[in-house]
Image (cartoon, rainbow, N blue to C red; front, side):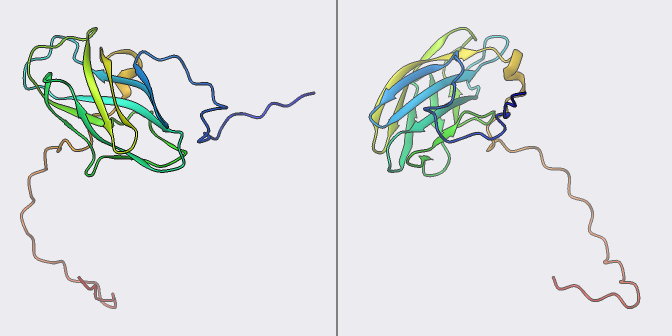
Length: 177
């Protein structure tokens, strides 16, 4: 009887992995691969001022680190927000490809609907730049589980009134604070 090992560990080796076909934009740069870039759009046309998350995977085939330093939508959005300092892509590794967005497109300048695409230029510290048409996908199906941009502040609960400290039980050590 032959036993087959389950693929339970994910390797940082894109040459031996099967990459599923995707609906996103793809590009090849010197030492870098951009894969499955897409934006999750709204169910109905988005109004100007809206923010939308962008998801993608960057594979660094080189032995040295690179960094995604800017993203430009050619005026479709006022700005594209990256993590502070850009998105680092260590040499020989990949980043992204998860349910967490890598870029927040902020301040939509005109109505936008799912099923369309926007021109996006990605600029890298070492790998140069590339322009691709990134699709705006509807929020349904598997995308419903994707997370919004992590920098969006959640409403804070109202502060509770300050109470007097509760006396410690006898024999309890004092706490330093």
